[in-house]
Amino acid sequence: MASSSSCRAWHCLLALFLLSSAAYGQLSPSFYARSCPTLQLIVRATMIKALLVERRMGASLLRLHFHDCFVQGCDGSILLDDVGSFVGEKTAAPNNNSVRGYEVIDEIKRNVELLCPGVVSCADIAALAARDGTFLVRT
Ligand SMILES: *[C@@H]1O[C@H](CO)[C@@H](O)[C@H](O)[C@H]1NC(C)=O
Image (cartoon, rainbow, N blue to C red; front, side, top):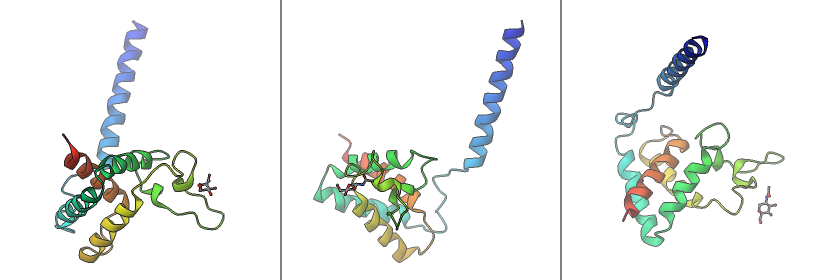
């Protein structure tokens, strides 16, 4: 009996955790619908251009996004350059000379900044690039 009730309590805790983290995340595919209505088009167009140059970039940007999610979440931290004594994730052992496609993220960010300055996070750009890369090279 004791083990079954503690098991239920554990499930209740898990459910609470999942609910609270879902509420905290506030993720929405229409988050930029009003603040940057052209975002999806800009990302899609820039990804099509990049994939015409090199089809493999679709997989590379999915991998970049995946590696961005290491170390405290998908926060764009993989894009940070080393500055002085600060060593970022970009040159950390699992990523150095391994993760690629930074120039495509930079190009998307430049294009997005032209139309929606200071609105869209680099973490979201990496996620959208991974999504479009996967969608566009699907076979
Ligand atoms: C990353 O790679 C470059 C080029 O190979 C190398 O010079 C640098 O020391 C590496 N950085 C780290 C932190 O391993």
